[in-house]
Image (cartoon, rainbow, N blue to C red):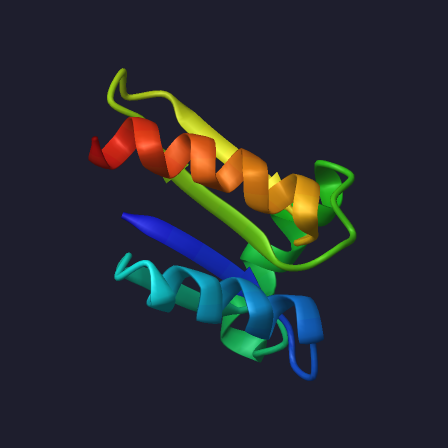
Length: 87
């Protein structure tokens, strides 16, 4: 399952979710701005990730992958991962 960790009022977060929807890829959204997701927010900050969205999943080899931010380069990375997952 792909997870999209987002924050409120984040243009890149909205673009990433829209992109996945357009590709008919299901995902779970976790809003890092919500109090109940404080531990997830803390976890990613401890990893040094201070940008949203954070997109995670597990590949066919059962290895976790992670992308943070969403621009053209990240889109290409995500496309490569999705191709591997769904082809």
